[in-house]
Image (tube, rainbow, N blue to C red; front, side, top):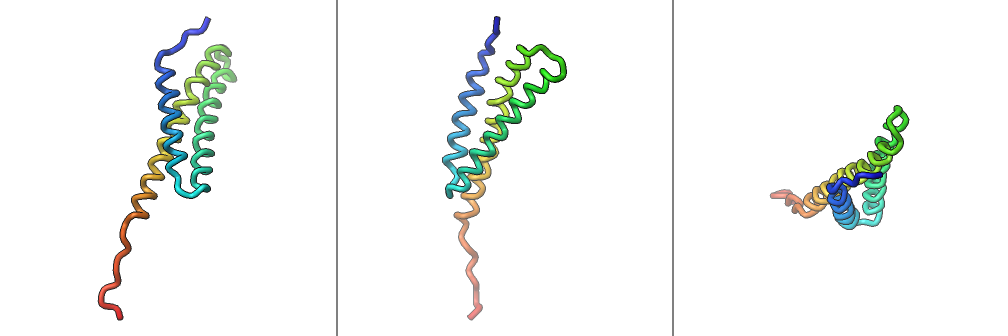
Length: 104
């Protein structure tokens, strides 16, 4: 018998929304690819931490539920980091270049 946490749906929703914003916000295709790999790495870290409890002797059922819960949490954190990097990169690119004054 599994007990579903009602907050898991919110974690997955935040994960998907932040992932879409994080990947689409990258301007060149290479930045989009890096964002996607960064998000997948964060999700893999969450699954790895959840499985680590199974290695330490916790019940496999509980470890599976932890892996399922940690995956969107760490993935959403990585997506948020990608989103912030994209916003900072865009803000820097919109700054005007300082003009050379009096040098002729």
